[in-house]
Image (cartoon, rainbow, N blue to C red; front, top):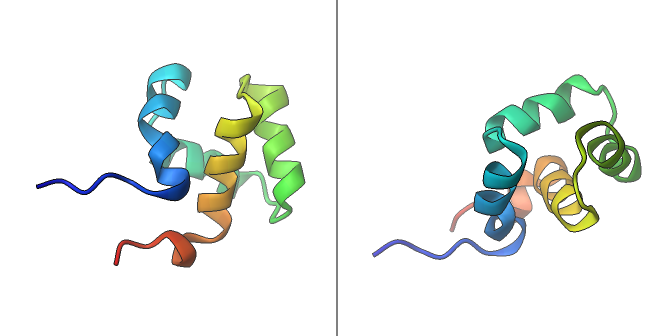
Length: 72
């Protein structure tokens, strides 16, 4: 039985569907941005890629703190 994603990962299916790239592709965008500031990365996704605040926040949170969201 598949486990339902928790936290930011629960947004991933809708992020991929709405913004047309895989989560790994979006994480590459964040890595390439060269910043580790949460607010800056959220603003990048919103201003340059048309993300809504909730989707941008979830993706950045997961990107910056993968250890917090690792599968148990």
